[in-house]
Structure formats: structure tokens, C-alpha cells
Length: 314
Image (spheres, rainbow, N blue to C red):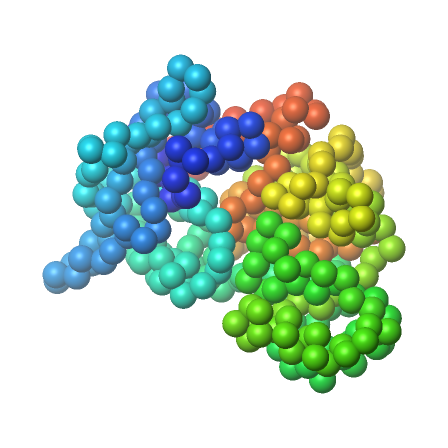
């Protein structure tokens, strides 16, 4: 059995934090051959039949626990030869990312995690529109006038780029901010004039959010991500810390309400964020948090992921 991990360079990942590392390690420990490719290496070979190919490298686990591959042993293969393909590269969600999904969706044999068509259809900041009853009041726009009216109505909001990740560009803005029009124009321009997300500021935002990991719609663990002092960014990439937590009744209900949607769209590996009983994000591109939950709860979420994939492949 062969798994392909489309990801950032495995030699450069932080093995004490990275979720993809845990999935690869678990796969290797089960005797599954693992390979690495960069999304830029995937291409279509169209000659009467479509063949989706890529350069790949086989991944090995070193004695010190890090991952490696032989740069001299590059292989060119038809991606139909894999049992499963994990799309794990970090955003940005740009035309390169979108083009890659057009290629991967043509594959017939491999199980692709997550479904490339739905990765393209539902950028994770936009997927919230499917659950308006679960989310705080939100605007998705690049129109300064629309944003100002929303900010004035809600007094305080969180702004974030629609296609960012890892806490990039997240700021808190109030209606009393001086030169608000000029600020918003510069902010939008900073992110290539793409739409931005304006979300009503929730009172417990500074206390952190709950990251919940779901495998095929089922909750496998959660962690409270707490921002650094004087910060509103709880993302681990932005310096947030991990605190043990559990889900209350309302939070469990949120997970239950989105379950069928995730299953139907073949969004197998998902991380959602909850603040004050509101669903604030559904992360489907490259969700993180496995290692933090494992350490705090004494579980092995990567085992659940591989068990699910192997069962699905039978």
C-alpha cells in the first residue's frame, strides 16, 4: 500500500508540532510506503486519456525521529498508483492551489483527503455561509462602505483575510478608530484587494478558541488555544498555547449539526474553531492540533485517521 503526502518540504517541518508528521509516522509504522510531492510538481498528461502525474520522493523516518528523502532518487509516476493522497500543503488559497484541485479531482482510484473538488468549492473562510445559524454575525466583502457600516453596527469586529492562514492579518477594529476608511482601504490592498472577513467581536475572544478535530464528521479531540498576552491570535503558528478542555452541550451540538455536511462532501479530516458557543471557522485545507490534543488527552488521533482511511479502502 502506498500513501502520497502533498505537503511542504518534510525535512523542514517541526516534528514536535506538525500534524502531518504524525500521520506519516503512523503510516510508516504500519508498513505503508509513504511518498512526498509538492503541489507544483503535479501535471496533466493528456494523450487520448488523462493521466495525472507528479515527481515524488519516498519518505523515510530517521533514527532521530525526523523525516527525510533522497533528493537524488526522484520518481515520476501516475498518481492513480496510490491508495490514498493527503492534501496537506499550507495555504495561501490562490490560483496555484485551485489549479492543483482541478488536476487531483480527475483521479479515480486513490482516496483523496480532503476531496479536492470541495476544497475548491468551499474555501474555509467561506464555508461558514452554509451554517449561518451557528456563526457570529459576519460580512465577507472588499467594499469599504459595506465594512464600515458593519463595524459601526457591531462596535467592535475582528478582521481577517479571506484566504489567509495561521493567524495572518487578524486584527481587532473598533468603530471609534481614527481614519477608518483609510485603514480599511490599506488593509484590503495588503491582501491583493481580495475579500476580507469582518466578524462580530465575541467577548471571550481573548480567552481563546476551541479547536475540535473531526474525522469523517466524528469528534476525535479538542484543545483550547489561548493567545499570548496582549494578543488576539490563538493560532499555534502565532504563538497560542494549548490548554486541556472538553466540549459542552452547545459545542457538541454544533459538531452534530455539521456532521452530515462534512460526510456528504467527503471532507474527512477537519478542524473547527468555536468561541462563545459560535462556530467561527471550519478548516479543511490543512487542519492542525493533533499533537497538542494527543499530549493533553493521552490519545492518538493519527491512529484514528489511518484506521478510517484503511477501513474506507477495503
